[in-house]
Amino acid sequence: MENNKNNLLEKVRKIEQNGFSKISAESRPVYHLSSPMGWMNDPNGFSVYKKDYHLFFQYHPFSNEWGPMHWGHCKSKDFIKWDYLPIAMAPDQSYDEGGCYSGSALQEGEEHILFYTGVIDHYLDDGSHNYSQVQCIAKGDGINYKKYQGNPVITGLDLPPGSNIKEFRDPKVWKEGTTYYLIAGNQDEDGYGQVLLFQSDNLKKWNFLNVLDKSNGEYGKMWECPDFFSLEDTQILLVSPQNMRAKGYEFHNGNNSMFIYGDYNNTTYQFKRKKIFSADYGLDFYAPQTLLTSDGRRIMIGWMQSWDAKFMKDFLNWSGMMTIPRELQMKNEKIYQSPVRELENYHKNLIKYEQCKITEAVTLEGIKGRVIDLQVKLTEFNFHHFTIHFAHNKEYEMLLQYNHKRKCLTIDRTHSKLLRDIVCRRKMDIEPILEEQKEILKLRLLLDKHSVEVFINDGEKVMTSIFYIPMEANEIIFDTDGTASMDVIKYDICI
Ligand code: FRU
Image 1 (tube, rainbow, N blue to C red):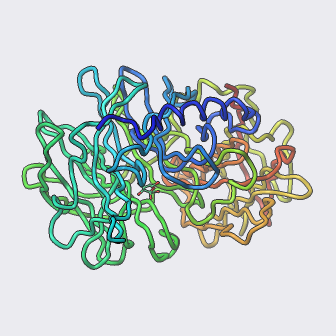
Image 2 (spheres, helix red, strand yellow; image 1 turned 135 degrees about the horizontal axis):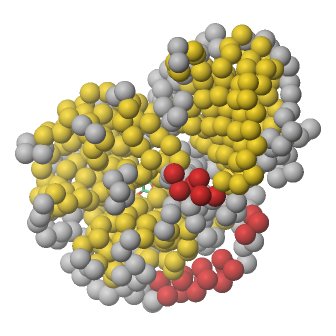
Image 3 (cartoon, rainbow, N blue to C red; image 1 turned 30 degrees about the horizontal axis):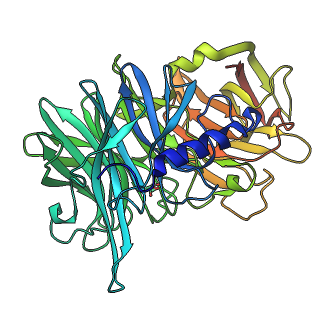
């Protein structure tokens, strides 16, 4: 079947063009990707195609609520400036009329191939409900994509016994030699999350190989949006489990994203899990995926929102942002994340303070703003608490507070103009590091109007959060209940 259903794609492309032109650039973040109009969730198809970085996303342009999923589309040369492109896919086929769910992309020769989940969702004449999730492909030239006539390429019939055919989604595809591999999230017969591995030599016919890893209840009910890649000698399975219970400060209730470190044998297809860490310790981070750049960098991008606190939709005529793309590196057996180095090309107006001693609340001349890269290095720790108040004015503020006794960092948006009693605080464990035999703690805050990403100790851990504080609240206050010493660097980010 051709892409049609009354030319749905053409119609939504027109609607998008029209709607997008009515949204002011002012309402958008400066260097983070935001939804062109309406609702955006997961990043999809993050890939290099003909030297550009392409990013698709889960998209419902008709409202600020999640709805039948389309694939929105944009591209960039440097991960910072994004050009919006016309919608790539609409749910216009019998096998995806319930939505074109998340997936990945690959360049093959001249073609850009998309792998996505089609949601089959319709009522039959006898009144029964036909619902399942199947894997599909579409091919294109970087702007227009055509769904494969033989779709779906993987259905419930291809799954191992006991697998839930209603919870089977988010294919990630890669190539080794001449063979393609695909992993997808699924749920086993006990209702626990698992990742299934398939193999193909033509992208059209896929064979199930193995369950790569699974939850036994301790890591959630359904594993969404898997990705699989190596960093140095470690193989990483990145998944986003649903319905988890909090585990100390490592994981919170509900949806989490986690790095599973392990060993992978690519002849027996066995993945042996070694340890698991959260991918982000803030309030708004989900469904990340990665790509590999031509210079060998593994870059991760995530949806900067949480399913449980979707409050931004009430304020603007678009909803949904992506994180800054982050470089992943394995150091001391840990994954470090740092904003892509391309961001530094947009640094302006450096202000710098060295060995600034504080014993009470202070502001520093020139250190303020809402679109900034703020780097604070603590070098003296004679205190219980050290606090950075940012996006601050008399009424509102965000807080980042370090408790030295407990070695714990808290992000807090309680006073950020919220009208709903949603989750406002998240804590995480973090130790100072040693530099020339001295303890230091590094906090790098990337602010972009209504979001903050805090990279701690060069990205050993990250906390991401969105907030809706009016832009005039732009002060930054440093405070302590003892004595702290710090170096501070601030750049404006100008695009
Ligand atoms: C994750 C997710 C995916 C699914 C998509 C639907 O946020 O639930 O598993 O493909 O969103 O929009």
